[in-house]
Length: 92
Image (cartoon, rainbow, N blue to C red; front, side, top):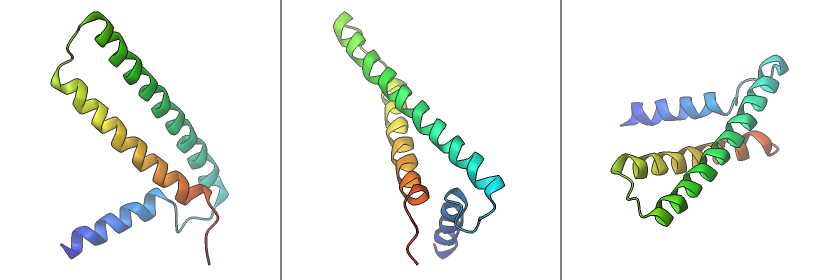
């Protein structure tokens, strides 16, 4: 269990660039992160819009539709937490 916890910590440090200060890496990564967040918001809008369209026409979506909604929510949570760590000033 300790190894899995250490692996999760290393992955989080890698995703949030905690040990990287070279601007040649940080600036493109921030741009990629911002574009990823905008794309996830777009997908969320499409998911909500399709939900209303399905309800309007009486279509019952299948199970993978709801699974994709759950995955989208988890992706938004992860991107949001990464954004708060990346964009807020670091406490020393």
